[in-house]
Amino acid sequence: MSARLVVLISGGGTNLQAILDACREGVLPAEVVGVISNRGEAYGLERARQAGVPAIALPKRKEVDRQAYDSALADQVAALRPDWVVLAGWL
Image 1 (cartoon, one colour):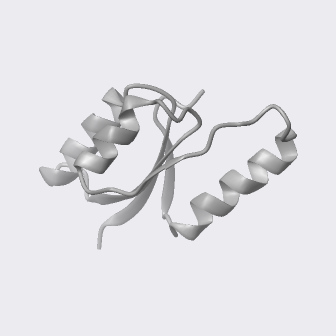
Image 2 (cartoon, rainbow, N blue to C red):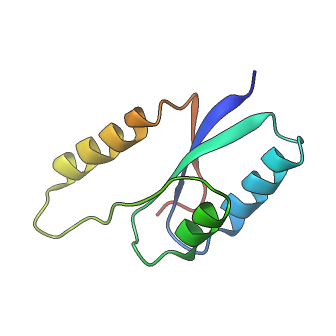
């Protein structure tokens, strides 16, 4: 049984791509079930979409306090039911 991964990114997604490739090649016994970025323009979201992985942009808005943002992020992650959360360039 492979592990379910949610990958958190902020930028171009080169680390994400390495994870996606390793999963596809069977090097990493896992499946990326979702990618979340705190930057809507992060190219890594496109990499996820191209791989058929759900991609979620969740930028922190100035009017939202940190606790509310963290709660929203936790809800998004939990909805994807991961075994592991990978911080792959998350800032």
